[in-house]
Image (cartoon, rainbow, N blue to C red; front, side):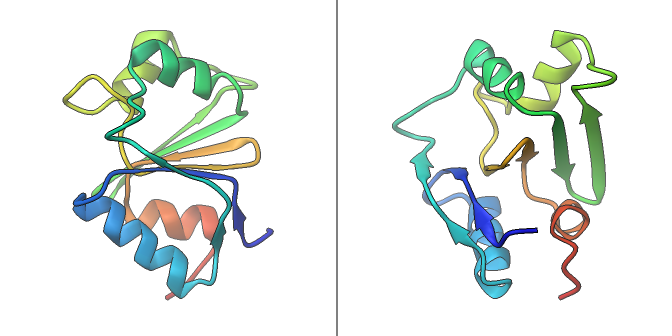
Length: 119
C-alpha cells in the first residue's frame, strides 16, 4: 500500500485527531490534503455522499472496528449515517480517505488493520 493519505478531515484540539496524526507520522505517511472540520462541516448528506464515493468504510471507536462493504453489501443509509456521524450530527473527525477506502474515527486497532502496521 502506498504511504499516502489522500484526504484527512481533522479538528484542532481533538484528542483522537492528534492520536491519528501521531500514528501516521510514526509510520511515515504523507497526508496530501487536510480539511479543517471546524471550518468545513460535513452534515449527514455530505457525509453519506462522501461514503458513496468509496468501496469500503472502516469505523473505529475504542477497540471496536466495524467494516462496511459498500460495493457488495451496502448498509441502509441510517446505519451508515450512525457510524459516520458524531454527536454534533457532522462527520466524525478524524476521517481519512485512502483511495477507495474511508477510515472514520480513531482506533488503534482499526489503524493497524487498515495500514498493517505493528507499532
